[in-house]
Length: 303
Image 1 (tube, helix red, strand yellow):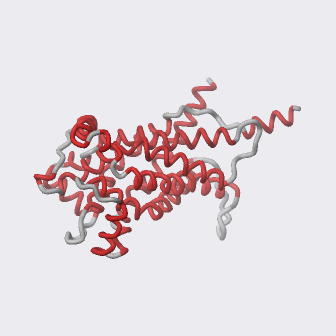
Image 2: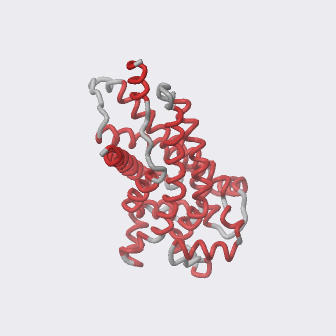
Image 3: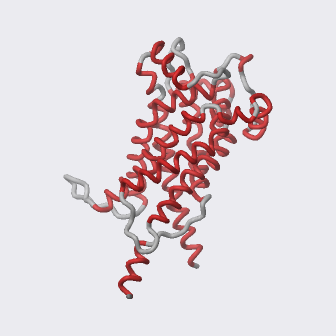
């Protein structure tokens, strides 16, 4: 009986607050927002515009509008993290906890990837309005003056979006965004657990180094997850950015066909470098913050 209870306790996952992941993602976003701004602007550029580097975009923004300009759209970014990331991380952790209840062994990699995909879809739906605002606010300065949205912050932007486009406007690009969210959560959050568990179980080949659960493991696993997520999500990320940034009603298929015709298949990886330079550090910071917040919450709950 004691052995059975000990096994259950060993496999039982702590019950963390649903909002904890959203807080971790918001903390990471505050540090990596300038990279997100550069990525969106690169993806928004059409085929006739020379492709600038990420550093050139940031330098140009600072020169023309000041240092604060690289944090344009931060309010929309935080709104996005407290909807999209809060739901995708909170749902994933809850599903993972429920799959480990009643003494069951830890869920397999396949089950974790399935849970991550479902949680990603839910997060994509919850965060779609904030995603629209983020894309519009960060790409506004590269538009002609007559086509700018001029949202002051995320709240006023949300009100303007509903006034101008109605409630239907909140669902602009929802299909592409939900698809991208499924791919992102599966390739980022699901792969993070996969890399983390694999590195814990097996020593690194050649050097025979064995990882232990701690800061260094979290950094390495999250870097691998960020690279995986950037590559898998690049095509849908570009299409999503162009749909949300437009004022027309083009479908994802129409955007895909037109972009392929005008730019070729390489358009699907436009902005990959700034996307990785944003998502890599963002993934590392998000998971490191998340792991530390979970540890802090566990200590607080048991004290």
